[in-house]
Length: 200
Ligand code: SF4
Ligand code: SF4
Image (tube, rainbow, N blue to C red):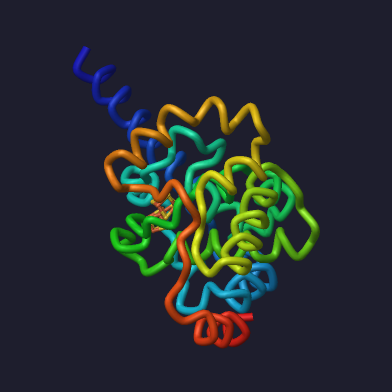
């Protein structure tokens, strides 16, 4: 009986160890070119190869319920150079750049920077979806006024139906002074324009 229990414990341990070693990539299975591409795109300082798949990033992620791939898995896919999987993942667009993962990562991987960098590559490669369309409308409107006018964003993104659906919330926000019912103006359009040109 004792012998059986010992055997079971040993085999369980082996299995757990096996799973762990499978999740953590060996250096020779990594795709250094792909990782370098991500680092150059904006993931500067992101120690992608150092990820040990501990899952701390996923554990603290504020939007993981909406993602089809956890930040931990996304980093693993980036390590492997599984570009198509990374590109098709909605994680890129569900990430709210809250930086919790980056502040908690014990290895300095900076998952939020990695996601931003992959997103930039995806946009340049012509990926189009609801999120990229929303981002583009958002940027166009900020460029136009220097400040966002939310009802305009709603109308451009979701049309009349979205405006009607969101009207009760909009009225509540306006009554509480959280949203202006009319477009605001920025104080110094010239400086804003200069800043915009610099950013571009
Ligand atoms: S917290 Fe850091 S080391 Fe752990 S899985 Fe996430 S990226 Fe990898
Ligand atoms: S930055 Fe993105 S991936 Fe990281 S915790 Fe926030 S939502 Fe999750």
